[in-house]
Length: 102
Length: 189
Image (cartoon, rainbow over all chains, first blue to last red; front, side, top):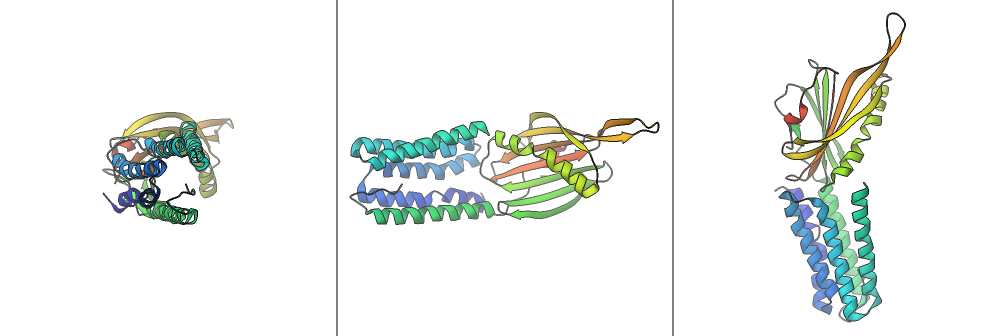
């Protein structure tokens, strides 16, 4: 494995640290799912290096974070959380459509 | 996303979120600028000329020229994340215009490059997108009759090398009779 692979695997680490910090403060489901999404981002690099198709990378990341927003909204009823779910859900749909349409 | 919560103030959340994503952007920038191990042709006798084509995304170009077979192979290795085959197909379709312009500007040749067909092939164990083109020229014969004939063929292939995180695009330009079977000799690094 070369430095490029390490750099790519490291890209979600700041996000993971952010969500760990936020989760330790507020114990919110959306922060938990954000952290899971970042862990997936780190693991996905190694899956791609092993031959796994890279097209799963962003959809799974976006989907996990969107799900976190919807689940948190179910608990908190705060508009920020449903907004997170909707925005990331739309980003997911757009990413899938773009991947199909290219 | 930044949002107000009891546990963390909005200002703290927004600040940390911004710093995190700036770091992510920096890491992506470093990834795309990271030098590649260039893809190469192996086992063929060519004159080789190589250079760094651009720094971001890091792209390395190797040109192989064979005077004996009158063929040219250009291999570009580009630092990318995994890219779907459809994106490679769309990018390769630009080869037609790029080649026509290049031949007109460099050699004054008023040739017509026409798409012939697309397929998939295997290169060094990777599935690659392949497109073939015919290069036509209009010539005037001894009796004054003009004819459009195939003067060269061009094939372009592109694929993702997952083991070193690069995309490779190779174009081979050769006479209409010669078929150098380039794909068997291409290696990811």
